Figure 1 (cartoon, rainbow, N blue to C red):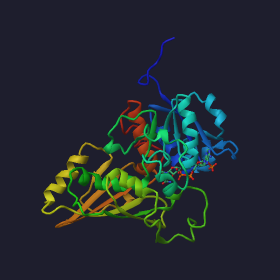
Figure 2 (figure 1 turned 90 degrees about the vertical axis):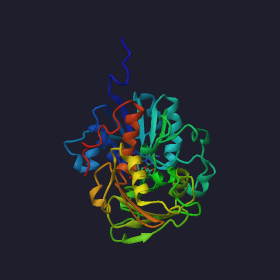
Figure 3 (figure 1 turned 180 degrees about the vertical axis):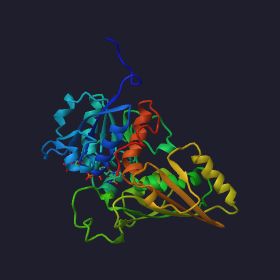
Figure 4 (figure 1 turned 30 degrees about the vertical axis):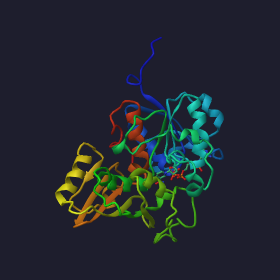
Length: 343
Ligand SMILES: NC(=O)c1ccc[n+]([C@@H]2O[C@H](COP(=O)([O-])OP(=O)(O)OC[C@H]3O[C@@H](n4cnc5c(N)ncnc54)[C@H](OP(=O)(O)O)[C@@H]3O)[C@@H](O)[C@H]2O)c1
């Protein structure tokens, strides 16, 4: 019997949390990716098995996977190379070590393994991390700024941190931001950012436009970890389904020219197919349903405003997970990202 390498066979995968918004998007991307084969889809243990297209009728005749209830005992029966976890943070944290022990690569979309300092979890996530030893192993895959080859535990960045970090990292890396500056980031997300479960705060009649999470949102330490500096980050909830628009304001060092800023953004992203540098202000209408991050900036002497727009469920979740898995298994980075059955 010959042993087939990853380059010769499809990568077999499971999606946990497939009934949720990001998990369902992942199922669509995986089905569209010629290098991957979606073998299993799971939701919580309390569900009965039913087709994903019952839960998301837009997948009717397009995706025929059945969503099954998850139980940890299923791990020994999986026969997959990779599991994508689109689960609440604590569920991901508990299931990940079991999957790793079974030799299954984990691509985690939750925040369970994003922060390197375990002591931040009680304050920002509300629980004590049970597997701090895995935080060092997890490779944080902000794909355009990947510094390490992904291993067996991939941590997919949060949606807001993706939008703001893509906006500010070119300036940080080029050391253009004034030392005394604390970047101010205001970002608005559509309601799908809160997941599919019904809550009063995210119900149709309640959502208008409001700020929340002042100083204490869990994405703040993640953004600070990415940028290596403090930020003031204020998220907002808007009355639209999906998309994030982030406006990041910084003070530059003295005498940084407009040409220099342009050069820094161009050099950062000229070979990054999913970041588009625009000559007009981004609109979430142009990124929803796509894996892109749109960027634009305006400068007035030392003040610089960078605007970024992403689909929170794609570049902010499922598409970035797909990018990471493509790279992890030696496939083209954008495979499957432009042909999914996405809204
Ligand atoms: N929404 C976004 O924009 C976004 C962006 C980036 C990252 N994320 C992160 O991605 C993860 C999923 O987010 P989401 O918005 O897609 O959530 P969601 O819509 O609420 O879906 C969560 C899924 O997890 C399943 N689940 C819950 N507890 C479970 C358990 N103990 N065992 C197995 N399955 C369980 C749920 O099953 P049932 O349906 O049966 O309850 C559901 O399928 C979260 O960690 C979130 O922070 C979300």
